[in-house]
Image (cartoon, rainbow, N blue to C red):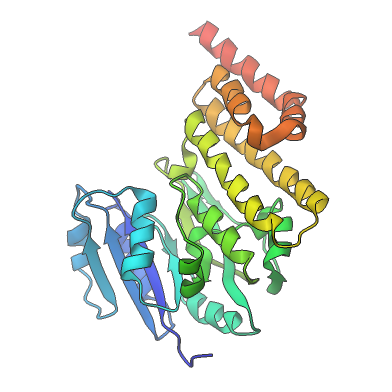
Length: 314
């Protein structure tokens, strides 16, 4: 282990002037000594630059794109062109850390045994009505294959802001190659399959759920496109000596709750037909076992009935 490997905290942002100061200050408050914090502003049409300029810290760097690249291309530029650390974590401009020792503890765990490429901690979810705390795991290390097989359990999910990853390994994996909602999961799970994942039993930050998050998109077409990450992930896993039946069961167990989540987002928009379009166009990925289990579940028909009733009343 390098005595103090450099860590890059990347803060990609667009139009987040109301949140960016909290993100930057929480990153700079990390106790880890060998740190760089890079704000990558995707041509924001607001006062983001002025907010960042208020900080005076040699570890902080502000970069503004000449033109808007979009969320995932901005992630990719930050990682491939700007980061210089051996390890990287991505803190979106509307999120923030609450544990100043996160990076220090993550780096310590990353070098606790050979082959670790990801250290994943937990985060709270902050909404207008309060804060939701996550289920915690004890600090542990798993093979990437085992991490994928357990991904139906939310305790094993990767949260972007709370997941430190090895930058050279990420570059070799073609990180952020898919411009979809869950580009982070697609990249991190493929990287996990190349080594080991360490789970840090700490809540280290907060994800601001304010309504403009990309993951709250209720467009059925975008949600169908997002399902494509699982084709990519499981194609990688299929050549990693994971038994086909075991992989199939894990795949179905993971996709079932994700599909329910997607349908919940679609129903929030009141679009009954879009729910069935999602199931129809997503069928090649979801496959028969998942779609049938969705169709026989009373949730789908109850939500359909409620939304149809609301339309009639209006």
